[in-house]
Image (cartoon, rainbow, N blue to C red; front, side, top):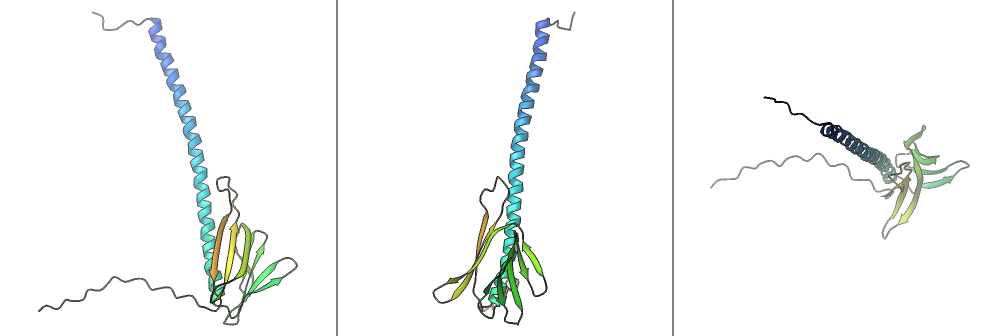
Length: 183
């Protein structure tokens, strides 16, 4: 009794050809998968950078709004040889200034120029007359050096000089239970 089955040479070759086809299909799927992974990875990096730009712009806008709100009068544009500077005289007697130095937005707090945002494409601070108040608007565009983020990231912020911002609310506390009177 023979338990082994005898294969002919043509049947043994089919197994080898099938193995080569499977290896080829696996290689094609691996190449396609790595290409798709690379595209997703690049998109993820672009979105992370855009989130960083947004966070930096919002932090700078918080400082700018506070400076405008604490202003004693209207902000002044001072034209210089190298830079145009927006000077804001504060109610407490200090002076705060903003300028664009190349691609950096810098804030002068009375001692030194501190860069607060990098990769600035354009920054314009201009008065915005409203119905009952004169506000200031800051238009900010930030460079994006990613092919996945085509247009510059743009922001617009508004503040009113001399109108202090509302204080931050205290952390909300859970409501306390009041005993219900029983009859």
